[in-house]
Length: 111
Image 1: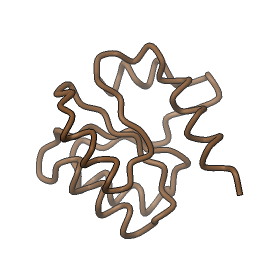
Image 2 (image 1 turned 30 degrees about the vertical axis):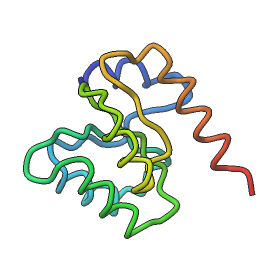
Image 3 (image 1 turned 90 degrees about the vertical axis):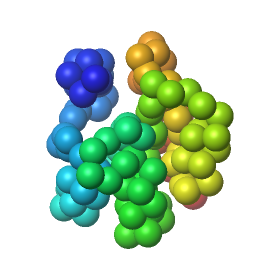
Image 4 (image 1 turned 135 degrees about the horizontal axis):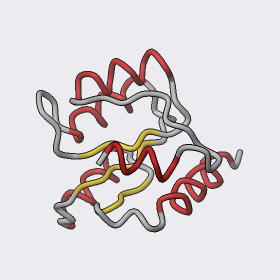
């Protein structure tokens, strides 16, 4: 999935700065790189995406995190948004990923 996302995003007003294989790496890399947007899966080893999201938001309440999951269960979408995610994408339906990212950047950039 990371390969697919990288191909969809790179060179189209966005580029992949870093990739993480688990939630701990995601948090560490967020702190180190401070990316404009994070796309993070809910299902990850060691620390799941919801726990990583919570940790990132605690460190930076303004973080723009888009969660994705193949599960597509409403309670996970709701929990992600309650924890501070700016959006949610059900994989593998990445057809509108660029639109979703641009919408988040636009909305979150308004003072």
